[in-house]
Amino acid sequence: MSNPAYITLSRQSALVRELTGLANNVANATTNGFRSEGAVFSEYMMRAGAGGDGISMSRLAGQYLDTRQGDLVRTEAPLDVAITGEGYFVVETPAGQRLTRAGSFSVSPDGVLQTTEGYRVAGDGGAPIAIPADAGNIVVAPDGALSADGRQLGRLWIVTSDPMLMAREGDAMLKPEAPLQTMQGPSVRQGYLESSNVEPVRAISRLIEVQRAFEFGQEILSSEDQRIRKSIEIIGRGR
Amino acid sequence: MQALRIAASGMDAQQTRVEVISNNIANMSTTAYAARRAEFVDLHYQQVRPAGSITSSTGLIAPAGVQMGLGARASTIAVQLSQGALRATGGDLDIAIEGRGFLEVELPSGEAAFTRDGALKQTGEGRIVTSDGYPLAGDFTVPNDARRITINAAGEIFAYFDDATGGQQIGSITLALFANDKGLEALGGNLFRETEASGAPLIGEPGVEGRGALRQGYLEDSSVDVVQQIAELIEAQRGYELNSKVVTAADQMLAAATQIR
Image 1 (cartoon, rainbow over the protein chains, first blue to last red):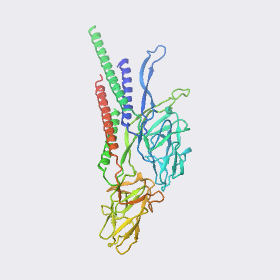
Image 2 (image 1 turned 135 degrees about the horizontal axis):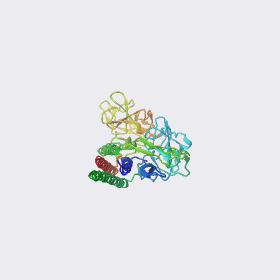
Image 3 (image 1 turned 90 degrees about the vertical axis):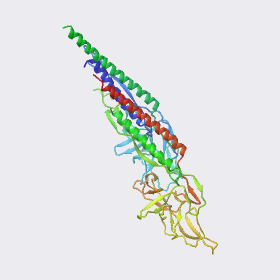
Image 4 (image 1 turned 90 degrees about the horizontal axis):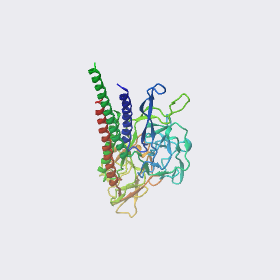
């Protein structure tokens, strides 16, 4: 194949990767606390510099985490909490501390606040939050403090970290690569869950764009094929 | 083409949601039924280029990585044990729990099960049983010559006889609390069973230590909010369609790719 075909192919494979990301966004359009992902394309220079042809390929260089607020959905469950604005809940997993925006919590049999996957939710400074079984109505204050019948139970640890340095891990959790900073003045709401921040309309319109761009690439490939055929034909005839 | 499988996982998730909603709507008149809610999480991520990988010999790092998500899955179908509205029935053996807690009943196997359905009946032998005939835990029988019985908020049962003015206590009903209500296993027939996730039941007198009070002559309605369920049904249906749109796009791209020459 010739260079134009390789360049087009590099773009096609990047588009297929973007489609994968879009499909993941749409599949998670109802995952609580899910953060939409966006693709960043970059140029990849081949044989750059003096004497080189300077072929520029395209590739998927990175993805960014869309940190916009998802819609709050009212559930009225006392242990459903949503963060409004910045911040993440800290979850203690066997592999270390993870961040999440999915605030659908419950109480473990040993009386500790946990996520739907059974991991402990960290209180201030990383301590678990104990909730006695005979606790009556649990109230979560806007600053994340939990109390039952006027008795303090602990406070949800809400942190910030560099969103560009967070790796996705599945189960609506993110792995922070930068140090955690305790957030000043967080705002949480009890009885609400934050839904996914994927905007289906935007995802589908980008999907159509990706699809058309891919088809356009196929056109370039076939016209390139035509060009090579024709030149072989002409060169062949000239002999 | 992973997009096909990812979209399929999304369609699967939405289908689960429709199934949960249809079960909720089917139980909109079931006594003390607690609405269920399907919750989803994202699947694992394939690390194509980890965030923070070193991009030059001077130690520069990539500010953002490339990670390919693999779709969504249902994480839990959580029971939302919220208080349903109380409906006055006037029945002596209709009791509603106002607040947290479960009535304990004995299954034919001897195992304990728990319910919030307080539509109780009396057998010929004077035992108090559920609509399915499972006896309520506690060692008491209602005497055959009792004119009527009353149950107070603390669960004490009094029987009244023709020849006496005052009531006579014949026993009391206890309530069970669980550390994690969401961890109970639903058995059908309005019954739940304790699991390792729910923790052991804390059995005691109603109205104290976080347990709800009993209300005689009332039944608890289903907590299903039909309007909310229908709104969610529409959402789930649209979600399904969006995922199918991704399948179509991926399919067409695949068809275009097979025509590369």
